Length: 79
Image (cartoon, rainbow, N blue to C red; front, side, top):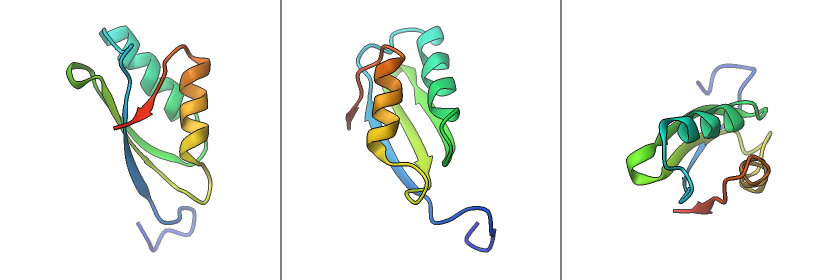
C-alpha cells in the first residue's frame, strides 16, 4: 500500500458507538464513514457497539469522522 501513489500512510482507530443497536444502525454508520474522503476501510462490530476505521491522516482527521457520525445521529468516542 505504501507504494501506491494515490494513498498515504494509513492509521486505524476504534470508536465506541453506544447508539448502534441494530443492523440498520451498523449499515448507516458504515455508509456515513465510508463517504468521507480519506477513509480506506470501515468495519462495524454491532455486538461490541464499536466501529474500526482505517483512514489516511493526511486527508481526514478523527474529529471529522466523529462529526460526521454525530450529524448522522451517533455519538462516537474513542474506544
